[in-house]
Image 1 (cartoon, rainbow, N blue to C red):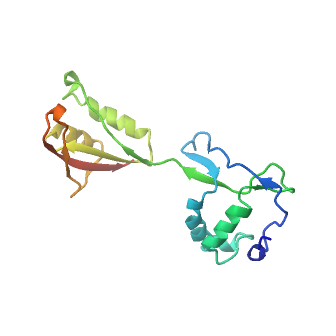
Image 2: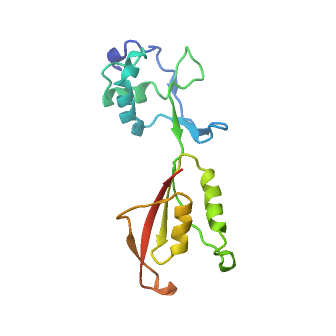
Length: 184
């Protein structure tokens, strides 16, 4: 028997049966950076945080204080079940956003170098990812690449430099790289 005493305000129909997790569903533009998915155990800490904030006093069903055990119970007994009063529905869907992190890499054929083309290209690419965070690297000796990044608003990460061992097939040795970051 399931103990629902902590959830006395929650709808008490007996579940009709388990549902499969919903497939991830992307929202239409302009919200296509967000998608719906089933509740996951990795969501539990956020539920605890939310249901113990002022949100707790707006919502009727969740117990207060809300614990990880409450989140587990909800996931196991309500989040993925069908209820007779609400045929064909699933109790909990989660709105998620796509990752806003990326790595930027580029190169330019010699005949196009020194004309300002790459700065324009990088700036245009970055416009396609509002809210994203990009990491980029440039060799210490590659001042042109560093200038491109700086023109496009990248910030040099102090102390973020590192060494990379180059493959022997490409000349070998150790190269010094600088790290840059940009929030779009």
